[in-house]
Length: 192
Image (tube, rainbow, N blue to C red; front, side, top):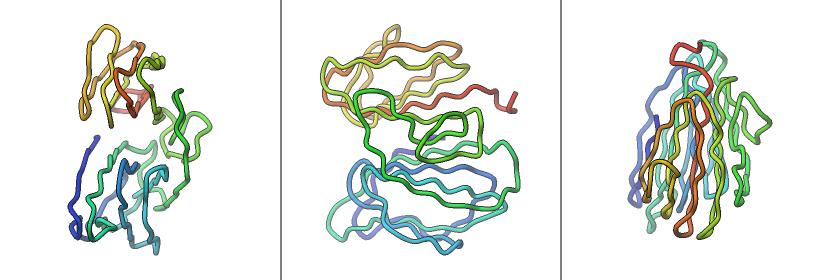
C-alpha cells in the first residue's frame, strides 16, 4: 500500500492500532509529529526515514508538526516475513542523490531495516535529463513523489502517478526536477 497524504496544520490521525505490518514513512515537505505505544515520539522531516514494525500490535498517532504549514508525506506498508514479531521503531537520516539509494530493506544494506527479505524501497532525486535504471524484479512499484518523469515503455508520469511493473525493469528519465520512490519486491503475495 502507498498513501500520499497532505495534512493541514493542526490536523492529523488520532491514535489507532496496527498489527503485523512494516510501515515506512517518508516526508516530502513539512513536519510530521509521531507518537506510539512503544514510547517513541518525535518529528519526522524531509530526509528522515521512519520504519515502524507493528508486529504483535502497536498504537500510534501522526499529526502535522506545524501550526502554519501543511505536511506532505508518503506512507508505505508491506507485510513482514513472519507474523507476531516484537514491535519496533527505527528512523535514520538519508540523503537521496541522482541514483537509486536504498532507504529501507530486508534484502540489501539500507539505512532502515525491514522484516521482509524480499522488499527494498529506493529513492532518488533527479534533475531534468537524469536517468536511473529501475531494477528488474518480480514486482516493482514506481511512485513519482515530486515532479515529472518518463518511464521507458510506459510514457510520462506526473507527480502523484505510479506505475507497477511485473518481471521487468526500465529506465526512468526526469522531465523536471523530480523525486521518485521505487519498491522492488521479489516475492508473491504469499511470500513465494
